[in-house]
Image 1 (cartoon, rainbow, N blue to C red):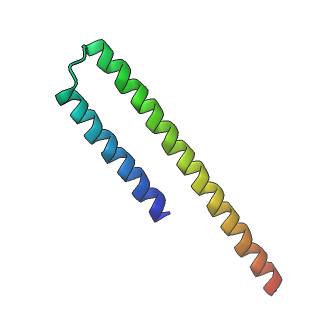
Image 2: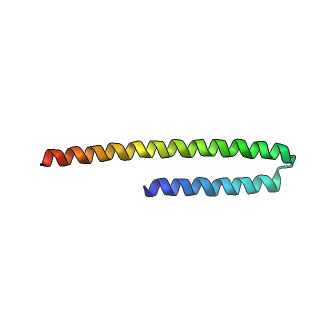
Image 3: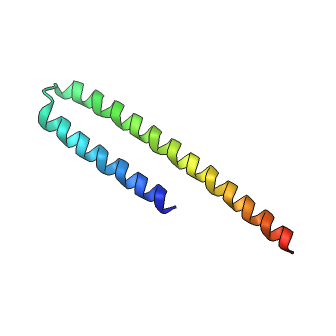
Length: 74
């Protein structure tokens, strides 16, 4: 769980830093920038969802293994 939280924090910080740098250095119109920012947010949120889903599956598999081990011990 700590790895997932660390990953999510890294994604958020990276997104904020990237967005700030884009504002400072990219000469784009407001509308263009909004579109680019929206696309970036959509991409990042998709990556976060994918990572969270993958981690959830890993944790479910681990829980099932632990449950099976407990049942076998009884």
